[in-house]
Length: 255
Image (cartoon, rainbow, N blue to C red; front, top):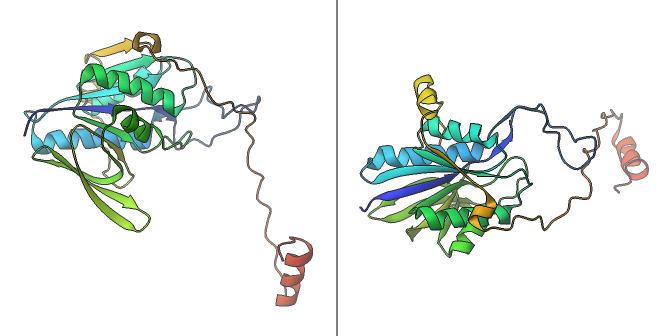
């Protein structure tokens, strides 16, 4: 098997344990003074890249590169990926709100420079749940894709992936290079050890801008308003079926 270089995308998002609130301007969720961490699906992507190297050896998977697009604090997320086992990182620094297509365009430019054999992304980010970047990237690159992967392997230079679909599981294979997006059941990410966290501080981290890559990241979409869902009302006990039907018909007006 020829040597591989794996590119992994990671995103800084509000931590999954935080209860999100809509900001006062109703333009999005409150992110100031809120704990952030790596998108859980991206943690799975990093873990899978590391497991592929552990399985096939460093002679096959020669390098793992972590990439993140976002503000300066996204470097903390990249350092986490480096502590988990990535070799180096690239930060596309911007304070603008990035839409999936913009991220896909930025990643396609980095792919053109780094020439990876495999790109692994989380299937979606838990902040916007777009589930679009991986598919858009594959389209821009004209590469085969295996989305929602719950199992990934490389045999004789061929990618094999098990996908979770509505009807069950689907096994697909494709040539390399390719794009994979990870599902929740692909693996359980490891915790970075303290020695690896210290080593990550010395690993190379390159910073570029969208302008350096020649990508226009202007928003094509406009968010008009963000509101919290209505609070759920308490339930009511009824004494009979007739009373239930009456309330459904006259109060809830669903009959």
